[in-house]
Amino acid sequence: MSMLEAAHENDTEPEGACEGSLVCSTCHVIVMDMEYRNKLEDPTDEENDMLYLAFGLTEMSCLGCQVIAKPELDGMQLAGSRDFAVDWYVPKPH
Ligand code: FES
Image (cartoon, rainbow, N blue to C red; front, side):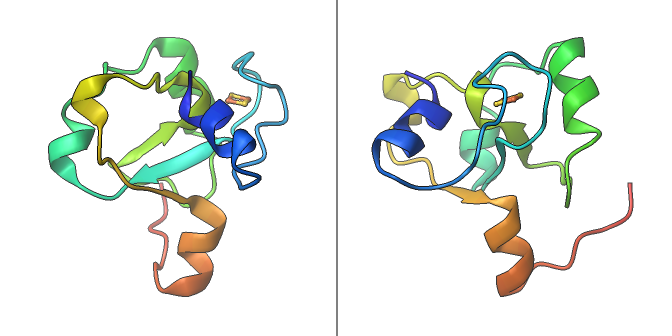
């Protein structure tokens, strides 16, 4: 199960408009801890192309539809980029 699917099962964001087809960036999420970010697979070129279009891109960004749950990620916290920007994060230009 991807993080996007897990979010939808719990009636929460992100949107995920293309449902994991890698043609949008509406599933953009931010990993809250570098320890977990380092456990993720390197993004593919296709994923990077979509990430570059994401609002509030950071080095901790990833596409929720591409992050698949696995035991090593147990406890990982993600923030939706929209929520993050509204609460306290000031996005840097990219
Ligand atoms: S849902 Fe569109 S790229 Fe993830």
